[in-house]
Length: 308
Image (tube, rainbow, N blue to C red; front, side):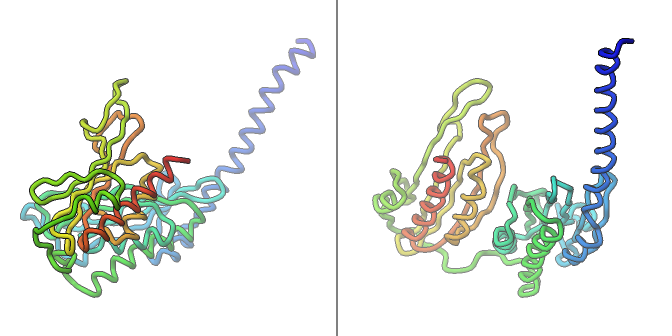
């Protein structure tokens, strides 16, 4: 074998040796960076390393009895909150699912946002559950102990709600709006989009377009953001839905919560859509103009992302 051939063959060999050495060095170091004891201490619960190298914490909801379709559901059958941490470069990533009753959602979501976590889904897992249960999915990136403390803050916020009231509430409180007269034109002026009046309800709809299976689709197929106002100018309710790309989700959720509007669901409506769209449903009560300004603030937050 001549020197040129020998050298050519040697290079890939030594490259493999070096790569293998780096993998052997960096692999365990990255895994060791996630210290279960430190994460558990920051979270205030036991943390365990999993077979895939992630570190996981959990909290079983034994504080409120739950029945599903008449069955007293054991906590082990799906009433567990959890968060799992995995290395991400020099830091870590956390993903998790948190069990929330309806009156805990605002507190949990506000705590997540205050501590830099993302809310990536809010939905049900059961039918005919008493009290009603929802599941809030969380995500974040950063230093692992700090992330663990962030998750703890969310769980502590939930526990504070239950400490103040043992049983979940059956409503948000406040006066219930009575159907009356709504100034649809005034609401349209605040929001910046046309409002249509129908049976005492003023509804604002904002459409957008996307693609599915190569076909352009639009508002008529469900690609809309909308808000419906019921009640009167003095005391109204707002409900509706935001259509969002992934990058728009957090700004919209933050804006809704800053406006005091309750986020009641976050999920997808379609599969195979381009871009992938997500939808958040919301509810609020108060003076109609105040609710309209809150809705407008979320539209503006969304537009700020879309314009970048």
